[in-house]
Length: 523
View 1: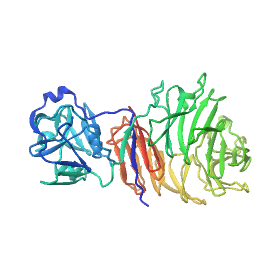
View 2: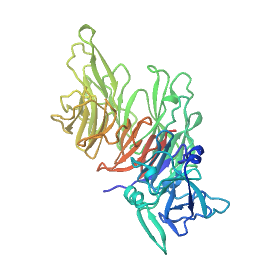
View 3: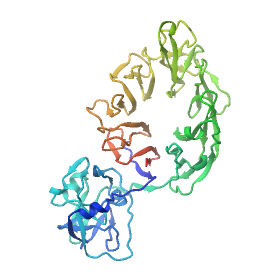
View 4: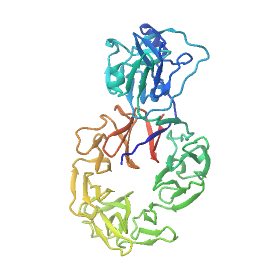
């Protein structure tokens, strides 16, 4: 089934395509007029007489204002940089219309300037000096011409003009799919933004003074306090605070105390505004409909550390083999008399029917165990029977449908059937991030951190440094570092690897829930 998503954008800072006045004044001046005909855009009749940024006409061509809101109303984004000029892209989501009103009526004739800076549209350089209908500056805002080249060929809009209806343009067949709101998410002393997530019909975010707020998605100004973080006397409470959504639940986590003797805290923030402590200590926990699975990950790496309980019970029971350490990638360090073992916690844990899938390592405390390697194990919660699913050493893995995708000690990517067998090598280069959606493997290489789709040649977003890659409710979300020289900083793909939404905005994080997309901008 094809899924549609509507964009609800959480914006922390608003900007428009405003050009410094000294550049505008130095440009060539031209005469423009207001349209003498009707204009209807995305079903909205545009009134120009009292509009601060009206449509204008130059050389018998109508020009459109690229303000922050007007451009997004037509499904476009703009970005201005003094060195690279103006970038315009089609995003895939149109916002509702917002008019900037004037108290006095516009005149019929005005002066505008030919834009003297570089312009790029959908990644293509526009030589404004050679254009018959160049981009203009009017009231310090960039205007672009509604020519066939831009309207149809670049943006794919539907375009018509006649004497009775005037100019009619539709950038989309659907109703407005995006809006904007501002949330008072705290900026920490480190300069990082506070925690944020969305679960069901609610937004959850970290405000000032360690207060966690809950706000309805449809009425975010109606926020209320649902949790207060403890004071960070000698621990890492504020810097380590995070919010995530797991199986539809909003989960808050934070750390108190030191790195060794401290404790992690996991809190469930419920829809009714109450909260429940789920766990304290160093552990990985996954909550399912009937069971909660936990792996204790405190150093030294414990044996008997794989646990499960029914959700209507209080006590956990140990499962698996008591000679194994679970939920960690354990590896050998050094050689000979200097040989030792190290390890790091794993986040990979699945419960499918009556079987747990988890990393396992045999005999951590055995001295003559140098041949042991970390592997993927299937552990039955009733019989404790366990099976290693392939011979490969494994550092991380993901289960998608009936296939396990994993990285080995070289960070090469393989796949193996869910019931185990011989692994198939997919990527024979060191991979950094990887995720799978509907059998399509997305990954970044360690040597350049660019995003690739398995089977395709070249990176998806050239020169984009991939920062976040995650599957959310049937979509693949890719966020690129703001220092990237790539065209886009955010891309959202559907199950067919088609880009549904892309943005040139710098983005901190994205949440997709109940068909809505929320992203937080990085200032």
